[in-house]
Amino acid sequence: MQLSEILRPEAVKVVSSTTSKKRLFQELGDYAAAAYGMDGTMAAESLIERENLGPTAVGHGVALPHARISALESLCGVFILLEKPVEMSAPDREPVDLIFTLFAPEDAGVEHLKALALISRTLKESNIRAKLRANADASALYAILTEGQTSEAA
Image (cartoon, rainbow, N blue to C red; front, side):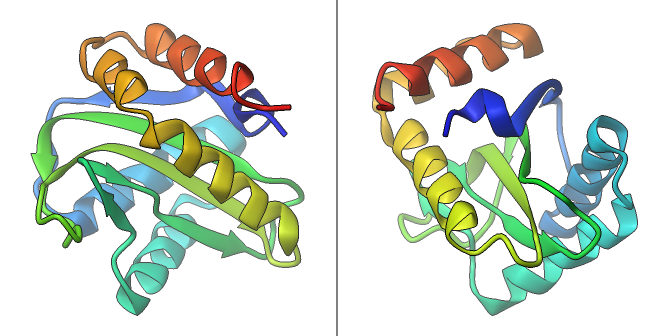
């Protein structure tokens, strides 16, 4: 599996600011709706429901919100770079500015876990995080994400 299989270029965004975690999830739902045709409200509500189980921020300014959506047929992702980080209860208490959201079909099982692991491995790399933060162009962000994981995958 490669990130290019679950992330479309039009699902990569640079967001100047968001007012709260809830608003962030609403925006993620809107981006998912625009890029993949899913119900944006349902996507946002699913992300909020999952976040209520425990924070999806993993540290180093990274969050990996994820949700299962019954109407989906395949895994899909949305990546956003926040110009102004938002508080998401990360274990290192750092605000989040790199958010890779994964939406999975209800029955995705192990594929969902493999995708989360791939995303996590990619964003765990400090050089990839630095490159992402140094770019404010969505197409450059997409290139960094998709080339970063191909050198590690196999």
